[in-house]
Structure formats: C-alpha cells, structure tokens
Amino acid sequence: MNENRRLKLLPATCLLLMTAVSCPAVYAQKGALPDAPSAQQQQQTPMQQQGAAQQSVSQDALPAPAGPKLMLADAERMALQHNPNISVARLMQLAQAQVTREVHSGELPTAMVDLTAVGAHENSRLTAGALNNPIVYDRAAGGLTVHQLITDFGRTHNLVRSAQSNAKAELDTERATAEDVTLAVDQAFYQALTAQSVLKVAEQTVSTRQATGDQIGALTASKLRSTLDLSLANVQVSQAKLLVIDARSAEATAIANLNAILGSENDDEYDLVDETPANPQSAPTDAENLVQVALRARPDLVALQDRFVAAKQYSTAEHDLKWPTISALAAGGGTPVRADQIGSSWYGAAGANVSIPVFTGFEYSARAKEADLRAQAAQERVRNLREGIARDVRTAVLNAQMAFQRIGVTRELLAQADTAMQLAQSRYQVGLSGIAELSQAQLAQTEAQIGYANARYVYQTALAVVKYQAGQ
Image (tube, rainbow, N blue to C red; front, side, top):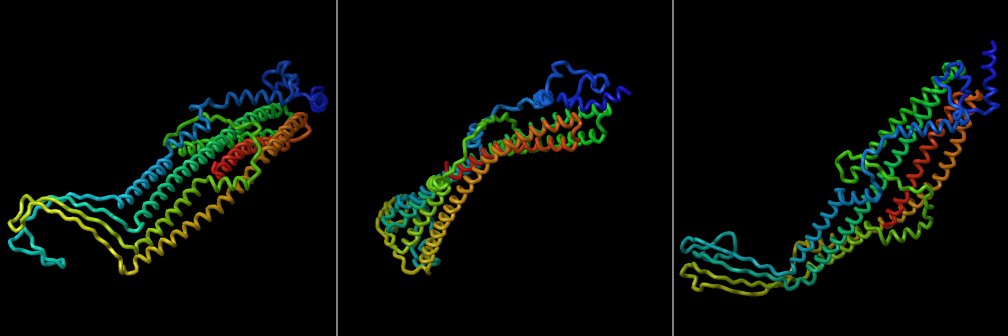
C-alpha cells in the first residue's frame, strides 16, 4: 500500500525537483532499469543526458569517409577536364577554325599536276557529248595548271570574315559551356552536401527517438505509462528509420549525379568538404548593375552576337554574287610520247577569264534575300536573349535574397524547436503531457533541422546561380 502511494506521488515529486529523464533510484528499486545511473548522471539535466547519448550514438553511427576529400574548387576543375560537353565544345571550335581555312583557300592560288596517257583510234574525233569535236591523238604527257582568283569584288573576303566570326562564336560557346558545367557542378555539389546533412539529421533522429522509446519502454514496464505510449513511440522510431532510408537514397542519387557531371562512369565515393560559412555574406541587392554586367560578360550572348555578325557578313557575300569574277589561268607541260601530228614536245599558255552573271534563274537574288532574312532572325535572337538575361538576373538576385532570409528564419525555428523539445520531454517525464505532445515536438525538431540544412545550401546554390547569370 505504501509502495503504491509512493508511485502515485512520484510525478508530483519529480515536478517539484525538476529532475532529469526519470527518478533513477525509484526505477532501480522497481527493476525498471537494468542498472541504476551514477551520481554524476543523476545530476545531469534531461537534455544533457540525451545530448550526450545523441552525440555518442551519432559519432558511432556515421560511417567513416569512403573516398578522398573533395572540395568544390577541385570538383569544378575535374569537371572542366573530364566532362564530355567541354570536349564537344572544344572540338566544335576547332572544326569551325578549319572552316575558316577552307573559305580562305578561295583567295589563294591552286596548282594541279596532270598526267595523261591516251591511246586513240586512228583519225577519230569526239563527236558526241559536247559542242566541239577535237581530234584525239596518241600521247603521254604531264603538265601543271595554276588558277588564281584576281577579284570577285569582295565576295570571298566577306565569306572569310563570316567564317572567322563563326569561329569566334564557337570559342565563346566553349566558354559558355564551361560556365554551364561549372554551375552544374556547384548545384550537384551542394545537393550532395544537403543529402548528407539530411542523412545525419535522420540518423540522429533515430538515435533520439530510440532513446526515448527505451525510456518509455522502461516506464511501461513499471506500469507508469500505457502500452499506447510505447506503441506511438515505436511508430516514431519506425518513421525515423524510413527517413534514414529516404536520406540514403537521396545521398546516393546526389553522388551519382555529381559523378556524371565530373565525367566519371564509376560510382566513386567522396568525402565532400563543406566550406559553407556559418554566417554567410548577405545576398546582392543591386540587380540592375548585375544586369548591365551580364549584358557585357555573358559568353552565350557574346556568341550569339558573333553569329549575328557572321550572318550579316554572309548576307553581304551573297549580294556580291551579282558582280563579275575575274581569274587567271596558266598551264604548261611536256609531251615526250606523242603522235606525229603533235609537233612540239612541250606546251604552255596563260590567260585571264571574266565571268559575268547575266541570268541565273533568280537564284542569286533569292540567296541574297534568304541571307538577309537569316541575319534579321539572328538579330532577333540576340534581342530575345538580352531580355531573357535581364529577367534571369533579376530573378536570381530575388531568389538569393529570399534564400538568405530563410537561413535566419530556419535558424530561429530550429532554436524554438529545440526549446520546445526540451519542454515537451520535461513535461512528459513528469506526467504533465501525453505522448502526442512529445511526438509533435520531435517531429517539429526534425523538420526544423532539415529545413535549416536545406536553407544553408539552397542559399549557396542561389549565389552560384547569381554569379552564373551575371557572367561572373
């Protein structure tokens, strides 16, 4: 009878003394706990005991790094060296440089060596397939033919300039591709850090809820809590374990995405180095200044402007088709084996040719009009991209500002959730609240921890997007 009375007075006594997780001496007498805690443990507050347990479990639960350390700068350098998109852009730039050489060859002389041997029917002529019917003689000869363009009134020169502009555009495109890959690396890197942070929170949540479940199990065994409390506590543990599974899946996906961007086909493991500052710098505020910087520095815009220039130069070249083409031709050689009718053992001739377009079935005018329209379309693409860049820069700055504000709010939310968790534990331990209030506090704390981790890395990603949109 006295024992039952003492157990009924236990909650009030613990409330007055504001003791820790439970009253250890009583639990030891009742056999609720296997071993009675030491005097030092009895002097600790509930959160000190639980924090020590969480730290111990979390340190033991987290696996050792499975790979080499990887910093963000190292990841960016690896991607620029191995990402196939970088190789494609570089090869396309080199190919366009060869196009410039091809077009420029039209301004240079060409020389062809001819070796000819003919066995002909006696007194035969070519009488079909052409307007002329030259006599064909037996012969074996060799010679050299040289052709040189004198002028086509700027057409070939404009084609060369257009090819050079296109080559410059490919060079800017290669630089733009490098910036695209760098942004993708930053996003994947911070995504992986987020996944790892969420995994740590999930593992710590399992440890915390398991410890709480063990305490409730001891209370249930001592008939101080109902089996409903124990069942709900076990539900919380199972939910935390599901969170760990989801977090591990997200981490594996993030690492696989990072490996793909780094240009690796292997499932490499890295120990990501978190260089995120505890107190990050504030977000940029002068969006209009960044817009002007972006309109000058964005490589994709510069590449599109180069393509517009190339289109204009090609249009000028197409208009030059209406002008004559003047070229020179020289040929010379020898005929050591020849018929008797061929008197000289060598030959040589030189001359000039003027080709004047008179009527081409409106082909030249149509080509010129097509080139004009394509140049106008290229100009509109430039204008469209400029407008898109201005919009994207302003949006990126706004997103960065909102992300920075979320860091402060989630930090405050986490502090409040921790306080609420401490109070909920204390109230539950002394019998002033039920398991529902404790479960709600645990859930709020977990969500706050995950929200704070997400906010930190979302802000770093937002800053990377601002730099990318501004061409920096």
